[in-house]
Length: 508
Ligand SMILES: Cc1cc2nc3c(=O)[nH]c(=O)nc-3n(C[C@H](O)[C@H](O)[C@H](O)COP(=O)(O)OP(=O)(O)OC[C@H]3O[C@@H](n4cnc5c(N)ncnc54)[C@H](O)[C@@H]3O)c2cc1C
Image 1 (cartoon, rainbow, N blue to C red):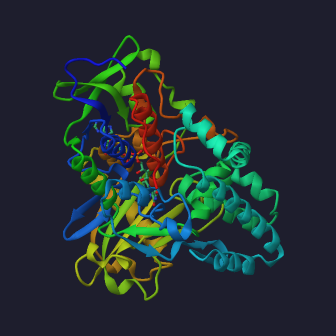
Image 2 (cartoon, rainbow, N blue to C red):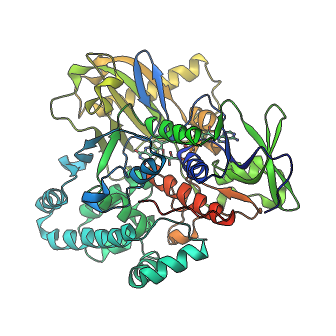
């Protein structure tokens, strides 16, 4: 790589989402200097926390994988291994249930950590499919076993691929074959019951925002098997504890994070990224630039050269969200209530805008997130910018429209939490416009999705058409979710570190 005299750092990172921070922390720990620019006053993007009137809310993510103890579970446990490498402590609380599903026809099922209990409960509802249920979930576990035996690294790093292939030839071959399978097709090879296939769909939709047919088997195996091995663990202090821990790691090894610093342009000359320009016009130079922005924002906003434009339709664009952050009287949460819930009223509309309600009460696990005598209820449904962009932000019409949507969602949740509307003490509402603004994401989208039938290997990797410009985050392999973007950060850091002649040590 060329070294120019006025470098600000070896690597500049645009955005402090978990993907960007993971890459920066691992590079910095390896002695490769990093400089992170974040538009907001805080780190974490969709995995940040924010405070309001004594409550600490999760801005987005709240179901977390990757914090297991690898001595007992033998899984990927990426967060555990990364924080061990950085020697930073992020304390978590074990969550015995990933999600409690409330589905049409009175079908209610908690997806417990205990896999046998989960499979038994599912088989009790569908006794005629008990064999198919076991075979399908067994196949997910098999794929997961293969994945968790292979060290994390970049699929573009030939040295890494050759060493993994040589050390685990059969597992690598098996995984390559499975990467072309979809979760839905696999389910249909074992299961015929329509209602059960709907359940398999919501298992995919709960994190992929796509049905099972459109969801790669490999991705499904990570989420739906790891919940029974590494388990679900919630960071004490809320989701923001993850980016905060990564920022501590970056600073501990000498890296820098600049807040309120929006990158407006990636400086490219002769097909090579040289640095960035901020909104105030200052320019910074580096040997490599990593973008944590979405693929559309990176190539249609930050790279000026139109030859690199990415058509909106090249990927399916996932919708955005309408979110409710509620402070509620504690009495509305019954004894023994689980933290995470998914509510579907009608299978016909579960995948339509607003059809599925996700809600969680993180104060069940960490009461310090709310004032005494109060709980948090965090709920969200899919939404689109187009539904909201005709409103002027802050106008009374906008506020009234937000209140109306929120009231409808609260009314539906009252089926599970009777009396919720009367228990609300604080209400903060976010529309897709809020997501677009705060997360700097094109149309506030959850990110690009694969089209049905596409293999997970068709997801963009860390390299880009521009030399020395790399990408991390949910636009890249493997996709959406905090553990997935963490993987993208690990693979990007390992690729760049090898290019710099300082390969990363394996994460143990
Ligand atoms: C409502 C909701 C619920 C979710 N629930 C879960 C869950 O329970 N479990 C789970 O695992 N995942 C969940 N997710 C998904 C998960 O949060 C995301 O996939 C993941 O956090 C995205 O990380 P990222 O690295 O792609 O960056 P992002 O979170 O998108 O962060 C990017 C950062 O870059 C900054 N940035 C962008 N452009 C610029 C620029 N030009 N200059 C400077 N800064 C810039 C942004 O301000 C932002 O801080 C949820 C997401 C949402 C929205």
